[in-house]
Image (cartoon, rainbow, N blue to C red; front, side, top):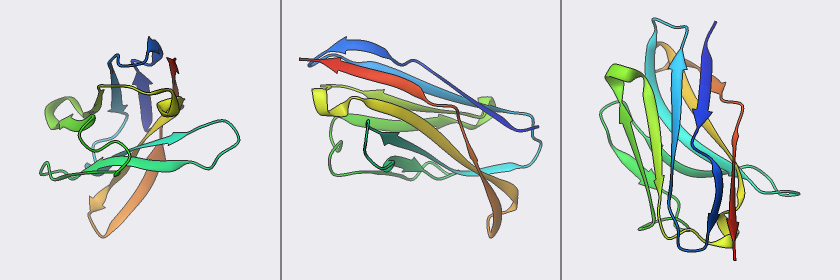
Length: 120
């Protein structure tokens, strides 16, 4: 059974840093795109950053220059380095992995979420 386990969330002051991790287990299929999303209380889940299997990255404009997504394919793990954190970054952060045999036939898997709280 595929599992995505996130870690690294917590409470941090404005301007601080956190590093989130998301480890995928329970599959021998290929892990294609991996993404981070976040959901603030009372708001919809929004995309934060994504990375392809080959390492091509994209970041939402709201986090560009402050957050960096990366991955270690040998460890089936994706990371989100978050610097210069702001109170508006407070949210539950979720990782998403697209897993399958072919890139054109994948299934979405989600982690359970990890809470990030930035105090002012």
